[in-house]
Length: 134
Image (cartoon, rainbow, N blue to C red):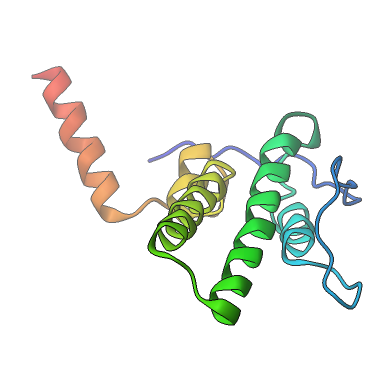
């Protein structure tokens, strides 16, 4: 049986970003700011402003950049290098969100309660444990 770590106290107030994030053409909340709000709201039990704000800021800025590239792609098209850069940026966003614990496997790795690891990972862990004791 896996040890369960209780969640820390949730953040009660969403912190303000420490660098500006994009707004929409009409002055509304841009994609990066939407992600900022979603991360602090849904991830607040394990995300700490003191230690995680820079990574959260980075992934939100990357999301704004992705929005600009996708907008350009739909309006004028992208050269193959720009498309490759867009795909690389999307991969980096996914990796950063995983580091912040926004996949089931990463939440389990972080020890967040209410999350169970997938069967394959449990199997790998059992095999690794047997190998070290054999």
